[in-house]
Image (tube, rainbow, N blue to C red; front, side, top):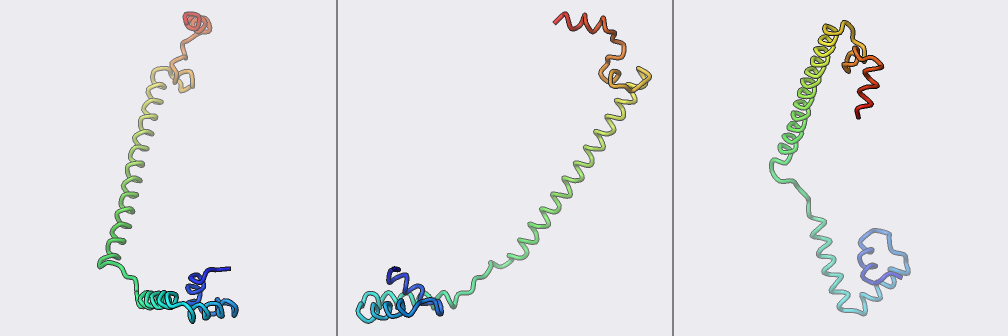
Length: 130
């Protein structure tokens, strides 16, 4: 069973209390002065909150809009930087491939690693020295 205070709080919602709970609450209010005082305080608080309308500080909409624009601008800058570094990387890879082609005459994986002139004997000799 709920406490009397919980019943008192529930009584502010329309149609929430059962007839038995309503009877119990009315009995407690009729016999207990401290409980009636608590009801008056709760009623005053309820009325005060009913009249309260939350609001925002002046300029709230402007601050939100400015923050959104700053985030959008930062994302645009990141895209520009990524694009710039990506293009630089692609240019470096193309320069490397041209350099390998000009020195070895082909662009194979061995040529990229500098192994085009390496024979099996040289490879075995290099591995046996470790």
